[in-house]
Structure formats: structure tokens, C-alpha cells
Length: 110
Length: 116
Image (cartoon, rainbow over all chains, first blue to last red; front, side):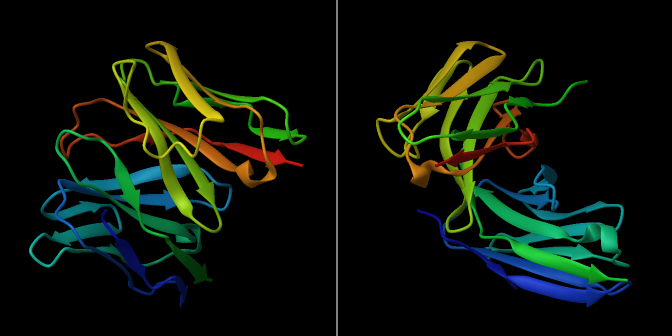
């Protein structure tokens, strides 16, 4: 069973700061997801990646397959970025099952 | 396009009652996932279907839980009899599969279930 660890568990930062959230996993994977869950509870898929780097607006996700590690970066952070960010991994190409990290609660202070 | 639609949004019922949660997939999607989220355990996969067939139900807690896909666009998750420890937020998600690394899962807004 894959163990997915996220750090930090909680992060508070000032508006405008550069944010990094980390995710490590223990077993080889076919894909890694970053999800965002807002205080209202809805979950949105931000990225799905299996190698390299992806960018969407102010969000950047990177993955290092050899080191079993991924990072989610937020540039020029804004209070609306406040949410829980969840890392999830898919182990098998033939199985869609995701194993989730416990999430990182991000609070951006104006 | 409409997203994944779950109903009800909130459910409060007494212990021992049957609970049925419903989910409508995004049109054209062929994989359906039921998740449970609690403070203690975070998000956990309960079961997922591909083309209406259950593929992995290893996360279903026990026989009190059952899930069905009566057709390609609709699913139910039933708990009978319900217990207070079943209180959680239940999410449904759908995707286009096989996804490899290229297709995300789209989540519904969740059903907040409270068993008294």
C-alpha cells in the first residue's frame, strides 16, 4: 500500500508570498494528482502529472519520479488561494484507484 | 456542461435507518468513484466502477455498504443499517477511462451525512 505524506500540514503566509507544498510517496506510481478543496467543501482537480512539470496560471506542479516526490508551488499568493491542497497517487496503469495524502491547509493573510 | 451531481447535499437520520446517496456522472464519462472523507482518515476510496462494472471495492467498510450503477450515468451508495460512525462527507467523482495520466477526476459537491 502506498504511503502518501504531505508537508507541511498547515501553512499560513502573507499575500504575495511564494508557496511550496510537498508530497512524498513510497511506491512507484503511474500518475500523481493535486487537488484543491475550498472551505465550502468542493474538490477540484488542479493537476495530473507523471513526469516533469506543469503550469496553470500562478500554480506550478513538479514531480521527480526517481525521488518519489512532488511539489506544488503558488506564485504571488492571494487570499483566494486559501484552501486544503491534497496530493493523490495512482499506482497502476490499469487501476484508477487513488491513494490520498492527508492534505495541507493553506491560509493566505491579506 | 453539468458537472457531477450528487444528492442529497445534506442528510441527517437516526441510527439504524437506511441511507441512499445518489450520483449522476458527467455525460460521456465511464468511470465512477465513491469516496468518503472524515477528519480522522481524510479521503478514502470506497469503490469504483468502470463501464458499469465494479473494479475495486476493497475500500467498502463492510456489508452494510453497497453501491450500484443501474445505468451508465447514475450510481447509488446505500448504507443499511446506518451507524453513527458512518457520519462523513461522501463524494462521487467521474472520469473518462482508461485515463493513463491524462484525464482528471471530476468531483461532485459531496453529501454531508450525519447519523444520530
